Amino acid sequence: STLEGMAREADPSFNVLQSVYPFAINRLLSNPTSSKVVESTLRSILESPETGRLDPAKVKKLVEDAAILSGYSRRKVLKDVLKSRNGRRLALRLAREQTLERAAKVSVKNRRLNKMADYFRL
Image (cartoon, rainbow, N blue to C red; front, side, top):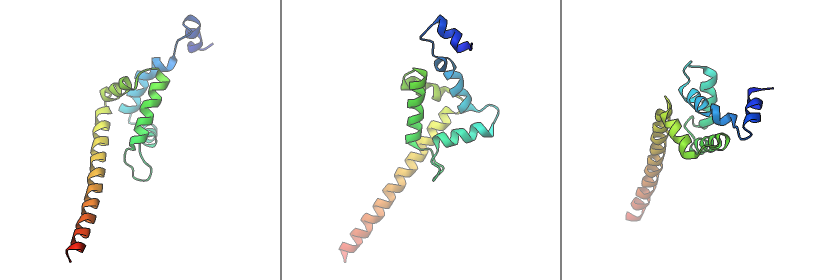
C-alpha cells in the first residue's frame, strides 16, 4: 500500500496534493537545479507558443487548477506564487508584458485616428 493509501485509512479526507502543493509550486517556480525540463514545462504551461509572452489566460488557468487540486483558495495560491523565489519576477513580467501590449494597441489606435483626422482636414 502507498503512503497516500495509509494516510487515507487514518484520515479519509487526506489530500496528498494539498500536502505536496507548497513544495511543488515553490519547486516549479524557483527551479533550484536550473533544470531544462522544469524550465520548458513552465514555459509550455504559461507562455503563448506564438509570441513567447506570458499568456494571462494560461496563468489564470494554472492558478485555478492549483486551487482546485490542492483545495486551497485562488488567493492563497496567488500569495504562495508571489512568495516563491521567482513568483514576484513572474508577476512583474506579466504586468510589464500586458502594459506594453496595451500601449501598442493604443498607439495603433492613435495612428488610425490621426490618419482619419488628416483625411478630414483636406
